[in-house]
Length: 301
Image 1 (cartoon, rainbow, N blue to C red):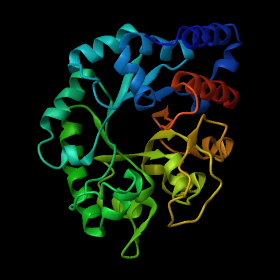
Image 2: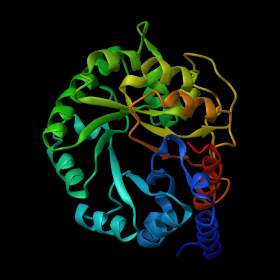
Image 3: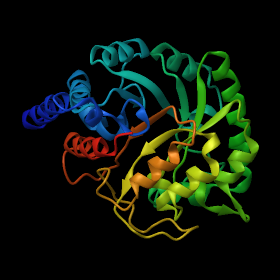
């Protein structure tokens, strides 16, 4: 079961928020606050229904799935709805989509998501198991891999569109590195059809690759429709190099200039955003996402 004090604290925060004036409850960009469920995956595995209720009590209205937590799509949808949440989008890796992807699309459609998002790229060669995953992906990918991924994205995007969903792609730091002199993110933008492929910009991972998230939004905002609101502790910014410290922290407690980010995002066609934080955790995940929510309320649209 979930920690009782954590749940009561989250519930108390939600009650306190309900008593605030409407303007104080507003969210950045005027959109419902979302949570990427990867952040609470361990809690979900222990208590699916209870965790979702806690997420709702903290103040999140939308969720983005990272797998169906061992449930059928129908049962996952029922559980999310029972908690008063909207499963707005879901993640599958490009490796999951490089072969047959129809069953994945069918599952997502059954859950009722609006966005079907590829979470990470697929390399032709295996990842080095001795390297941390983020670095291993970056080292395994080639320019040819990025272009093959882009071609597949167009195919998946066309089918998703036919089924009433929008296909998107989510970045890690690797997308902001150069391969044979070409920035991978630019290659994906160039080789994908805007009518079929949108982008979910992970702001924390863009910063971890040395890029200013605000600048990325200003330069490529027309293609960015979803955001991962992730803060990183490090202030290191060196374009083309993945930061040595990849620790993530509650939103507002790291090194990203969030007022600047959300100001730039207002000019982009953003349809949804999701708080995300990665392990290792220095506090319970539900406590961390409560702190993120408290900060985001100070950035009312």
